[in-house]
Structure formats: C-alpha cells, structure tokens
Image (cartoon, rainbow, N blue to C red):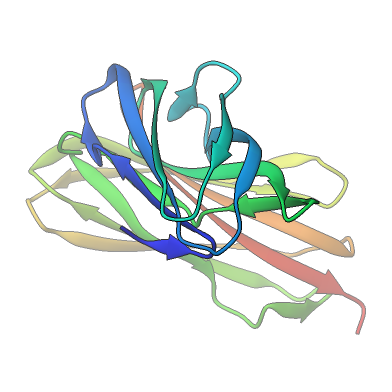
Length: 214
C-alpha cells in the first residue's frame, strides 16, 4: 500500500462499472503516535464523473501499527479521481492529512484524453496569444467523438474556445488538436478539455495558467 506519513492507505477496487459502487478504503497508522478523533472522507475531484455519497466516516482511535477498513458508496458516471482526507488529533494537536489523487477506471472507455496543456511557460504576459493542445487516444474503434475546449477566466466567466467532431478513429489511433486564446485579464485561468461520445462524457482534463503584466 502507498504511504504518506503517518498513514498508509489503499482504495479498492480501482476498476468499476458505471452506476452505484462501493469503494473500500484501508488506513494504517505507520507513525509513532496514536491518531484520535479521525474524520475520514473520500473526496471526488470531478463530481460529475464520480460522486461520493454521505458525509464521511469516523474513527475514534488508530494506534501505531493498527489498521482500519471503511466503505464509501460512489455514484459513477465515468472514470475519475478521488482522494482521501483525514482530520483529527495526534500528540494533543490537531492535524490534517490528504492522499494524492487515486484514479478509478470505469470499465473500458472508448477513448481518453491522454494529455492536455498550454504550450507556453507557466507564467505568461497579458495579451500574448496562448495555444493549448489536447491529445486523444481511441482505445477501440470509435465514432461520434467530440472534443470541446473551454476556459474559465479569473473573474469566473466561462468561455467556449472550440468544439470539434473527431470523426471515426481506429483502435489505438492518436490525434492532437490545438486551440488558441488571448488572455485580457490578470490572474489564474483554468483550461478545460472535454471528450464526448454523443451525450456521454468520456474524459475531462484541466490545466492552469497564471497571467500577469510582467
């Protein structure tokens, strides 16, 4: 099991079917101090793809070397990522702990966004055109794929940059699509690439940009 001190953790299963599922979380105290009053939550990165039901679970005490297994009900639409958060006390002080993101796959997807990023430095000048590129891979022969690009501006406005049909793709075929936009506000821009097949969302990728006057 992976470790992020002082907790070792594991989420199973890592592949599920669409619909309602149960994910099992195992936590083990690998530190030297007793952990008490633990508020344990399983959190979804994308609640459209994967919604964790309920308010979490409570573990009164976890001694060094002790292990606890919890179950969480999850409503699954498509593949997505979750992470674990724990709030509690150790050695008389409060602590907060989070795991890295854990990917949960849903069956076999027809296609996926392999990567998505802005083709520039993390910090760029205001008014400078920026190109963003998404790489899509077809896992089986697919039809009716649609790739959408959106940007969320620093003021919260969401703007559609492009929407493109990808036609018919053979199994393991890889294609790349690029879109440009010119930022006119300082701040953090959130870039989105959505992959659809008909009305079904297959994948969603995000990138971030910090824009300044420099």
